[in-house]
Structure formats: C-alpha cells, structure tokens
Image: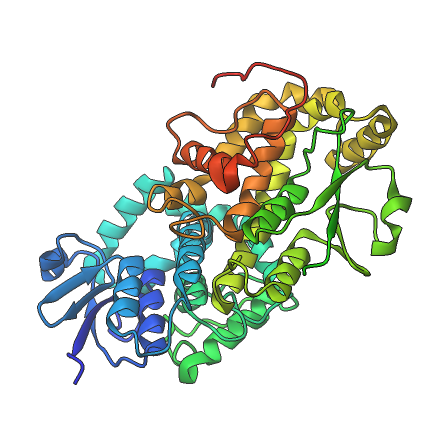
Length: 239
Length: 239
C-alpha cells in the first residue's frame, strides 16, 4: 500500500558501518513511523548518485518519483504524508519547538561533538573518501586532524558544557519528547550515535542523566541503534 | 468564576519598573491564557513576603490558598488548571519540547545576557536592594560590576553567538511556537524584555531575524511588553 522507500545512507569502508548523525535522525524517524526502508550504502564522494536530489549530502530519501533531502525536511514530509502513523511531533506547537531543538543540535551540539571525534573518522572511511574528508574538514576547522586530536580533552569538556540544558531536562523527564521518544529525541541522539559508531570516546560520564537517556535511545525501536555496527572493535574508553 | 490571581513581581526603585525575565515569562503566560492578575511590586530582599511559597524568588503566584513559584511550574499549573483557555504548549510533546527551550533560556541565554546588562541593573533598583544585589551577583560572577562592565563588548558578541539556533529558527518561522506565540516564546523573550527594561544596550542587530521576533513579541497580547515602563529614559544605543 505504501510506496517503497530507498534511503542513501553514509557508509564507511565497511558497508555496514553507518555513522552519519543526520542519517540516524532519518532512520529513527522512519522507525518511529513504522516505515521500512532499503538503506543504500553511499560515500561522501558519490555526489552523482544523489544528483537527482539537487544537492550533494545525505540523508536522501527516494519515495516513488520524489527525491527528498535535509533531515528536517524529510521529518516534516514523513509527518505530513503518513499522518495515520505515530506522530513525530504531536502537534503544530510540538513541531515548531522540535525545530528549535533540531537547530540547536545542528548548530551547537554537532560542531562540539565533531571536535572530539573527527580525528577518529578517517579510520572508518572508505578509501575513496579519505582525501576528500580530510581536506574539507581541515579547511572547515582551520586546523589539521592532528591538532584537533591534541585538543581532545578540552573538546570533550566543551561537549559536556554544551549539554547543560539537555542534562537538566533529562533529570526531569525520560525523553526530550516527554514520556516516549519522538523527533525531538531523534535529532539530538544522532550526534551520540555518530560518536558511538566511529569513536571509542564516551561523550558523557556514567552518572550523567544524558548517559541514561542514550541507553534508552539505544533500546528504542527494537534496539535499532544498539544493533548498529561500530567501526573497528575498539574498547570503550572509560571516563 | 475564576479565582483572583495575585503575582509577586520584581520591581525597581519605581514600582512600575518590572524587569525580571522569569516574571515576564509568567506575565506573558497569564496574558496568553487571558487571565487577569494583580501584580504586586516586590523587591529581592523582601523574602518574608513570599515565605508561604517555601522559597525566596519570584515569580510567585497566589491563587486562592495556593502559593506557586518557579516560572516553569507555574506555566504547567496554568496549562493544567485552565485547559479551556488557549494552550501554552499545544500537546504533551509540545510541552516536553518547550521545556528544553525553557531550560536553554535559563541555562545558556540568561547567564550570557546577564554579563551584558548586570552593571546597568543597580541604577534601576530600589535602595533597599542595592547592597544585596551587588554582593550576591558579584559573588556569582566572581568579579566586580566594574570588571563586568569593562567586558561589555565581548559579552555582547557572546550573546549573539549563543543566539545562533534561535536566529536560524526565526529565519524559518515567525515564532518559536510556530505561527503564533506561546510558552516556547515567553520563556525566551523574558531575557530580551529584561535587557530592554534595565539597559540601553540592544542585544541584537537590526537585520537579525531575532530583532524582528522581539518586535512581534512586544506587539503580542495587545502590546503588553511594549507598554512596560523602562528604567530611566535612556536612549537606545544603536549597534
């Protein structure tokens, strides 16, 4: 009855390693809606494969003739086109407020997490992506991966500082969306799943309420995020 | 039919100068619900007048025998006890997500704005509050008001940096709560009204989407916030 959904999903050297925070937002949103999707391994440099979307980044969803991109726009599309399925936002006000959280995650949390884990990413990448990734990211950060790696401790402290409002919230309620997860959670959790898949660093201390929420998110949707293949088999670095 | 509502509201030397960001959250929430309230001028050092609330900060609402405090808890009370009035949150998910925004405003925005405007506050205060305010705030900041004032420019730059996710959001939608204001807006706007009432500094540049939203919030609820008396009659400092 529903049209089949194909999703271009950023992959590492191993097809099974899927580490994009923005793709994880979409995968969780699809799971929330109970929509099956065929995820297609895609690499940074395969721009032409997603050219019909009109741009060069994933997630890209293909539903029938529709090519969709931008994780937020995809979430709105899923909400509006599958209204009979569990809601990602609850109501118009919930959607509007979730968009602030999504923006905060993109503008504040992602750059902070990137400073911690970016030096770990090349090891996860397909050979074809390594030079592209290093040159674009080093240009964006204005420093080499080696210099970024040397600042890991203060960068980790900065992530924990940035998490202050999330920490305070999750000490009061189990999920950003309230009593159960929804898109307000998906859009933030993507960053934690990104770190978990490519890095041995644990972003939050064990007694941090954020850590308990991460565990709940790993268990959600039948343990979808927990089952994800991690790059290498690095032991976790205890903090 | 509704019980009369009394609200203890932080006031300056002039009874009419009401500058607390947290009290403005509550005043806007009351206006949103169409609830009239008698606001009572209160000063920082008049702890005994609000002792029945079990703590020493405003806003404090008195509804019948109920003494309520904490702006977020008051908003939830109003939503739950006046459900037939316009909703502050829209739905359970909207409430949960607004709580993150409220927490972000309290934990990130308020401290950043305070660094800019705190040196202007003593001039607005009632004589009885000045020594208390200076000693508690200088202890909290770990520096004198004079030292804080000397850092006004970098502090203002820091506010504008912190506003990044709000700026990006308000370039896409007119209010945090969507097409019209609700508590997600009230909880953030309080900080702007605080600055507007006690300081001549303009927090955002004229072409910032946040500035246009501030104007919309000043006009909302019959121009309630715009009509508020400002401390002194300082001309605005153009940025």
